[in-house]
Amino acid sequence: GYTGAKSEILELLLPLKLYAGENQGLCAERDFKVQHGGFSEEPVESLIHIPGTRCVVTTGSSSSALQIWDIGGDDSGRINVCIIHHNEKFN
Image (tube, rainbow, N blue to C red; front, side):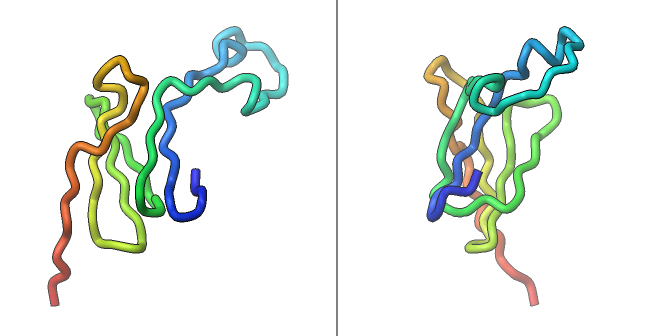
């Protein structure tokens, strides 16, 4: 989520209610648990999962950079940026 100058990136565990087929309302604070998390120094406008990996790509409006994030590559519970690619604009 967007929190001012930084953006928070979270991987949430699905609540058991969704697997059990229970028809109860879900509450973000009660039902979703954070599995991994991290912060982007820039606002994130787009986040896309890379199929077949534990990585996501983020972009924002404040720069032309693409950031590739490793989701839980270790046991620390952190999401870490592993590659920053700066795009050059073509005229």
